[in-house]
Length: 368
Image (cartoon, rainbow, N blue to C red; front, side, top):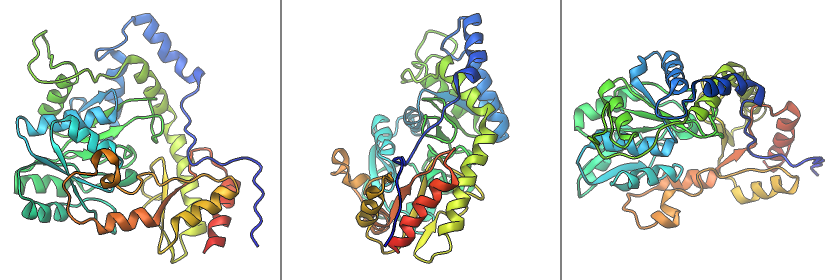
């Protein structure tokens, strides 16, 4: 019989933002300059540091107020005046569908590849041949922050003429830059957090300039709104948090990787349990999602709950079962439905201890 003494409840996620003393130098700079928004000096510095990390020119990146707004603006930029469907995986967080709708397009749900958990160019090509109606764009999703083959998606656009925006909301650690815009979230729950915010990056400076203009009411160098836009600028205060988070990022990343490696070492050898390829060794996100082949997900959740361990199906059962999107057009979704049954988010945060990991793994091992 399993005996696990739960002295404290163990959350599935416990974000840690920069402490007040780390923020203070940046906040003092805001006080001194009295610049609070509208692409201020801290926002410019954050964009420059992000660009340096990604190996691109600063004009290839623009910050936004949040990742969902960044997705919508990037879609509006790449599709122009086109109308129609935007292909998205049903295996994603619901924000993907909200962003497509906000951009004036209709989400069309397709399945994902079982190995990568992602919508691939081949799946998208097959969908194009089967859909009756105009497809204006495709929005693949980096599942839980995993790297995406941006070169393959760039080739897809060259071959089909259909533009692509990559939803890399959780993908700061692994984002790869191509000509298709990739959008990264800086929400407090992400591996690099600014409390709220995000950025859009691609190698086309004209695309980034257009997205920046759209994030500022369509203004660019004048008070004439030259494009349909909104107010989606990052504030100086959020940039201050983002800069402080970047100061600590190398150390934080080591913490996340140590927890991921502990999970893989303890559970990764079991045939019934699998983690995403490269998770913890080649890249990290801010959540740990494991696949339990043939498992009763709810039974596992109940076992964890019984000893004070939280878990979460981060993407639920798929967008197609979200009430607001239940009537969306779709193709068959067998892989999405299988992943919804067999995956579960385990406790995972930067300062999680070996004892915490041991506690989770003991419950899971006993269940199998």
